[in-house]
Image: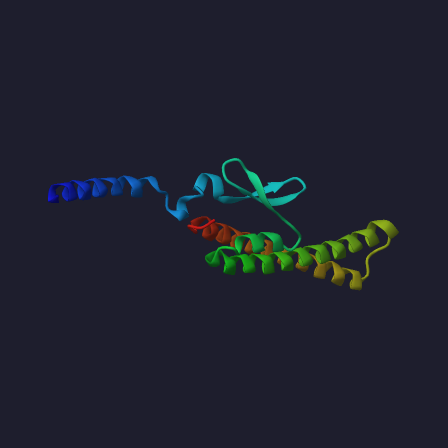
Amino acid sequence: MSRIASLLSIAILASLPATASSQQPADTACSYESCAVRYKAKIFGEQLVRGASGERAVRIGFTGGDAADFLSRVESAAAPARKFKAHRTRSQILLVVGGGLIGYFRGEIFGNGANPTSGEYVWFSVGLGAVVLGGVEAGRAGNALDDAIWQFNRAPVR
């Protein structure tokens, strides 16, 4: 009887490594090739795409809120995603306001054919400053988005 028990024990122990190796851990269910996120710029917008196929995960809107919400599903990516949204919103507003002021100045010069006043030069200067600051904020938003994507792709759970 002890011989049958030892053979049975050996058979059970021999089957354990095969069973354990055939099961995939939960965190590798989604491979890097199929779940990693990256940024894509298109003619009419920006988006985050997933995997080698480039399937669209989320469109990046004016404020970047959808992308920030998508990336915030991973705890380590939440802080840079919030920074991205803040910098993106600030840059978009500064660029729109600055572009509007520069457009107004251009319209006054070429539309009326008159020499611009000193007040119009002030508005032009404010608009130019807003565009420059908007560009700086856009760069910061890009850096934060890059960091959020990197943190998202490092996470074991997708």
